[in-house]
Length: 223
Image (cartoon, rainbow, N blue to C red; front, top):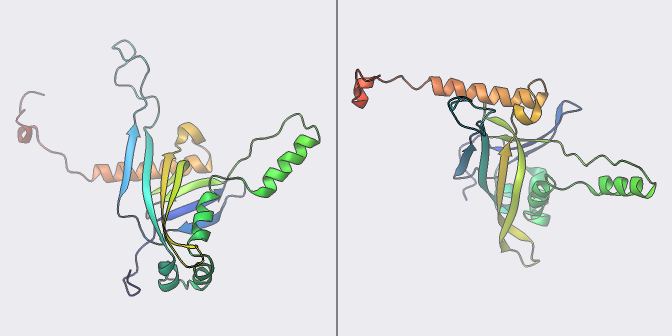
């Protein structure tokens, strides 16, 4: 930990209200993860044969992301976040360690107490249908041009160090996320548009790789 450091762009998570068309919560990471793991499930025809088209893809590959986030109360107190003062965060860290950040991540996968009470009141009143609880759309932000709609599939915390009050002052959060593509969100929705922008960014970067020559692979004249 070094309180005097260059300013780094922060990765983070944004909760986006599709109905209101705006971000309702932004959670920058205190410390950018050292590593990030991506894996892809290829979506292809269930029957792979010449007659059905063995090269046909049925949807965008499903991207899964696993990342470990370091939480440190001292970082919240000593460092600036996105160039802004951390007066509020410093107070929260001094009082509750990293518990506020753990709670903020936990709320990504947990309905609020008010929503639970409202649904229970509907049940008690004999409502025939109760609409399932819906969270804001979660966006994983990994720098400009890398904004990906995701669904959290796993969330765990390892609290590492405690103060004399047994308040955790350092912890590691492990997040598992599955990308939501146009197959999940549709093409014309705001979430679908964000995925399409993410996909076009991948296409632009892929086009930057120069095309090689068959001779470099030893197959000149074979293709």
